[in-house]
Image (cartoon, rainbow, N blue to C red; front, side, top):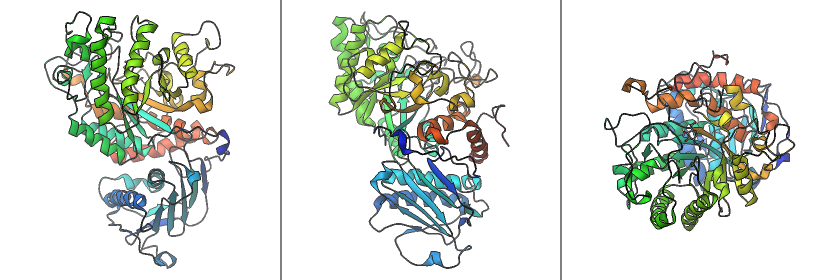
Length: 560
Ligand code: TNX
């Protein structure tokens, strides 16, 4: 679950993670590796919990199920107390102790993990923290633990002592299912990627010019018409592409089991051609536009003329209520990006109208940084998608519109989610040889995805001028747009062969960069170093091989 409590800069004294042979991503805040004997899971390993610790029972059962595939062990989750772990036992196996009875200082997602001879213990304050700790334990086990079939041990865990809490309470990833539809299995696969790297917010970009993916009972046309297109896809050759309510629920539950909240985005007032094609009344001339499957941005918005406002408000009410009710996060994303020639008054009307519906559902507003130009409800989140570097205009009278909008939003009390396009946009090509993706924000190799700090996103290059303080940054989000999720990005595809399966595109663009963004969001600056990260990424590459993940073997990374 997402938490946005302020970060305390003094909470993480520097402890370099570089001297270790363990490869945990994101790097833990505190990690010590001891020379002591490793523990080893074995056929007699048990997961021990306190009898009334339901959180630990749930997380423990899930972990036991995960361990079964590669180890073949049926590991019981029990409360039986005994002195098993004192007796000799290599062959029998270490005990794993899980508890959610750790102190409140561990916070919502923190945990302490200790390995002693034949005993691995993880303590957290919440089930969520325990899940994050178990994720670390998974990474401490040999890579064969990721095998889809039974594999050879020994299942050793190095003698480490870890205490870990995230730098930011919001660590997200956005999936653009509007330009290219990701079915339930594809979305679950993406959720697995997020869970492995301790992300906690899945932002689903559910609507855009090229498609509408959410079932809205009150507005069946949105899926009857709006779901018939995808970016670059020849009209009439497939679809419709959308989630039924049951399918959406399945996604929300799958994410919840990994302590990930789902944030729905209904984009507007621009990027709304799918809605304009479905609902005549949101167009100024009262005529539906043709469904759109090209890849231009900046198409006309829903009608913002006063006469159309009652109809647009009714549309917003239906779709934002539905999005709120089907999703798990206490946040709803209202879009707001790239609206051509919109006045401040029009943006303000749209943001107020959408904001009223969202807050009426008891939720907070999130939007692209442009919504800062409008009146924001309290507790709003602005997603900055401008560049990270090169903001020479900050603090001068040449400030760009984006900076002005961000400033205006922050002045109203909004917090910022950092998604700088030149660092955190997973749809940017790594290098010019890549078959998919875009490069309008530049090429984003692994080093660029890693070497940045959320706090300096909104400052001038010399750091002299800042828009936000550390407390005003709620977190980070990687964004996987999918307008060019096919081979050959310079023109519309001419053949279906150019469309790779969505997960092929997602694996390639996500790995190895998603782990980099995850570390930016989780790990304190003092334990971050690109060289060490690269070493750990190489080790993880071998895990991705075992899991069948088609990552990009970028030439600047020394893969084995
Ligand atoms: C800009 S960044 C967009 C998206 C595109 C993306 C492609 C933003 C809020 N809008 O509509 O998919 O660029 O990189």
